[in-house]
Image (cartoon, helix red, strand yellow):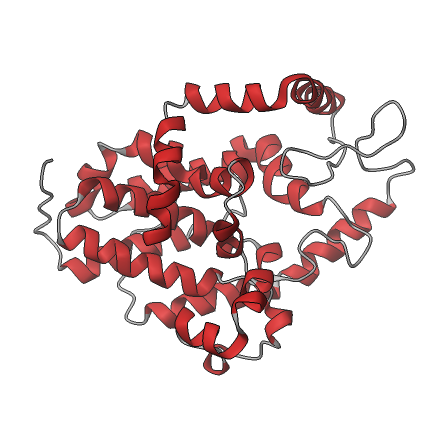
Amino acid sequence: MKKITLTLCPMKRIIIALLLILANLKSFAWGEWGHQHINKAAVFALPLAMRVFFYNHADYLVIESVGPDLRKYMMNDKVEFARHFVNLEDYNYTSAADMPVTLKDATARYGDSVLNKSGILPWYIEIMMDKLTTAMKQGRTAELLFIAADLGHYIADAHMPLHTSSNHDGQLTDQRGIHAFWESQLPELFGAQYNLHTANARYIKDIHQEVWNIIEHSHSLAAALLSADKQLKQSFKSSMYITDASGKMIKNKFGHLQYRGRTSKYTFRILACQANRRAARSDSDALRLVDRRSLFDHFRRKSFIRDL
């Protein structure tokens, strides 16, 4: 395996630059479309010292940007679930200074059951940062690419307001389905109009504080997001959710209720996809992974990721 040599910047600055590039993508785009475009945009914004290396592996970083979601939903990896969110209300959040510094500290204070229910996203981002630093210093190409792709996913999740709130799918305010609508359907509809350009990286001295700044900012937008959705919902005379012939609301493969598309063409496409998934859901999902040439890798890494 070829050893990586990055000589134009100190290693710590390079690692932190990668974090900032991923964190500074301001478009609220998640789901498969969003995660892939965020990782792709991050590659082109990296410092020259590392841009060439990551550009040569850009396809991998784009494809594997959805790896954490595949492990969570399709492999039902129980360990994966809590890594994607943090319900600040559950922790009675007031400021980062009052929160445990590390995941070990959080476990000692709250216990595993609370963490599994309320999420560990900010602490896990820092764990992955440490792992990425180690992999890069030791020139372990396969590991650093795998970790970098995953890290991009988790940082993108941290920028999604509903990933920081206990009302993550509007279930507490009669807005079920808003999660998938916001992070998947809207980006797919309007993503072509998004500006995914990001500024060059700057040095971050305090990774811990930066991560909590991201979480806090995202959480501050959750109420406005839910309010805008409620106003939109009130403008619809019929149900905003997609239903089948019997009137039962249809869920997507992630278990979220689906909003009706704003255009009939989009609604038709959603309904067609749902029909196909109901006919052969497991087969179609498997084939989609095979087409990405990553099914084997994901199964192989199911045990590996637990060691990260």
